[in-house]
Length: 278
Image 1 (tube, rainbow, N blue to C red):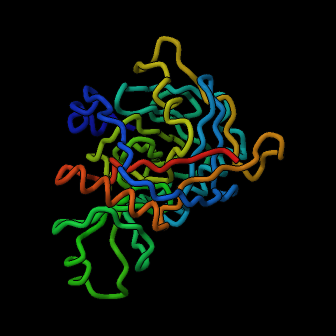
Image 2: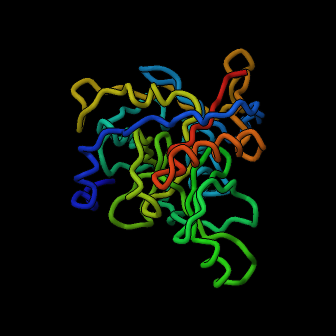
């Protein structure tokens, strides 16, 4: 995945994850929404469970592929074969090495997308762009002025923002070479924005992501023991999960309070989206 971008990303490998998202100073109550089990990925690993909200509205081909491979059992027992502290956990290659692929054809890039008006909850509005959320996934897009100049149907040209917990699809030098490889962000790396397809975000288990053995490859790598679509799990194995509703007044109030506290340095990566098991 990364060899073609080794120069551009060399500095990222040395960066720490940065400060954890800060809680906004407000007592606004949390409104919850239930995750769609058909678009929830449950990953049992050697370090614990990871729960991901998948977003087919942002990357329909990538999400469909990941669900297909999970249901085929391709991901079960694959190693985290490349883990860089503060940066990324890489896995999903059937040969447990960089550059592996499934039996299915490669996918075209889904680096950017066009969002219907009001589809995103915007938390950052600046002259050079805007940032917000679609579900739990952080996104960035062109400014309102650029959007207005583009005319058309009013849709926002946007892309996934590579904040901590974001799940993406790996690829080789060819932008259309995503296949089975997936990766999870241990910390923010916004240089990856609109370079790799964003398919979802970890909503529970970011501590597990950050606990994976580090190395290229690790001396004793961790593994994904079993990867399932939540809709396929029996009731005693999955009772559901909820995340804070990013469209609620309470969430918007907390994000606004955090933005005021952080000032010009504030970004979408500073906003935490709480989640809980049902």
